[in-house]
Amino acid sequence: MTIAKKQQEIIEEFALFEDWMDKYQHLIEMGKSLPLIEPNLKTDDRLIKGCQSKVWLHADLEENKVIFTADSDAIITKGIVAVLIRVFSNQTPEEIVQAKMDFIDQIGLKEHLSPTRANGLVSMIKQMKLYAVAFQAQLKS
Image 1 (cartoon, rainbow, N blue to C red):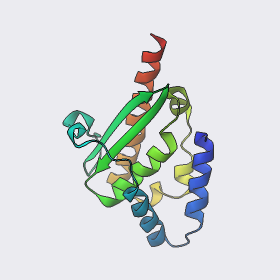
Image 2: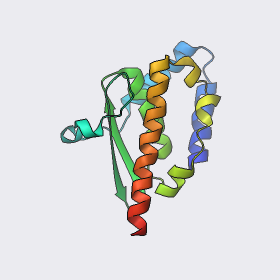
Image 3: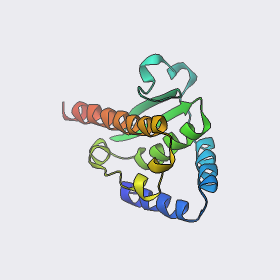
Image 4: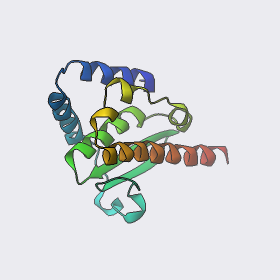
């Protein structure tokens, strides 16, 4: 499934909830299904800089597709990273680098996060795209 289709799916899911408390609950549920990072990979070099909570992010390249795993010590943040992994995992580095992230505004996520969580969201996206850029370079060499 393409990044755009995954984003549309998430937009439609969030549209089912009128109240933001229900949307937060959905986000928390998504966090519970997060593909967890191996405990030995929870190292300082995998921590996302700019996040209020701790978020570890790891990426592997398998058959030219990027596979992300992550974990966080905060439930909302875990849900946010789960949404991003759902969108980006199993995509090529090029697709990740070129992906537009408009769906975040469409579901209203950024405007309902505290400024520090919103900064963390931006940092997570940036780190995922940096992994993709690194894998792109690796594939070209």
